[in-house]
Image (cartoon, rainbow, N blue to C red; front, side):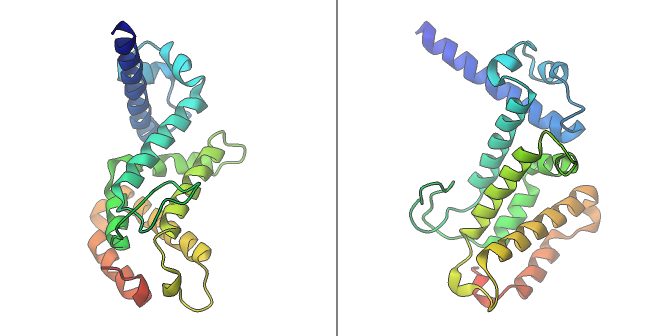
Length: 201
């Protein structure tokens, strides 16, 4: 019984630290956030952070994994069986444009915009983690593109890069000036531009 309580306390401490770090990384950026900041926000001893995560990069990896799972969980499942190495099993298709709008509005995705500026710097310690995040997003999008719907002369890989890039660009603009970006108008425009086979709604 005591062992179970210890495990529960450990899991709760880890969850509080990841949540606090995600909020602070989104607000202040990775470099400007200290262990003291995170510990104070989480209400947990600063020494708990290296015990749980090893170092700051280990904590960042846990935050990215947590926020990525929040995004992927919000997406409708992929049709078909789970492929080894893929992130998401699925059963039913969904409207990809609804998925895009849901993705942009998720509070968890603000972190991705905040970290982008640091990730593109030469020698950035978070570049590898951010690249892994983008790879997972491309995988999730590529799994939702029917091969028969690809326009002539295109590949699913190139279309995936284009779509993810468009989402990141729209997302950044909306976060900076939400009053100037009409997400519903963007969705209607993308729907009009996409090949017919990709209009799944």
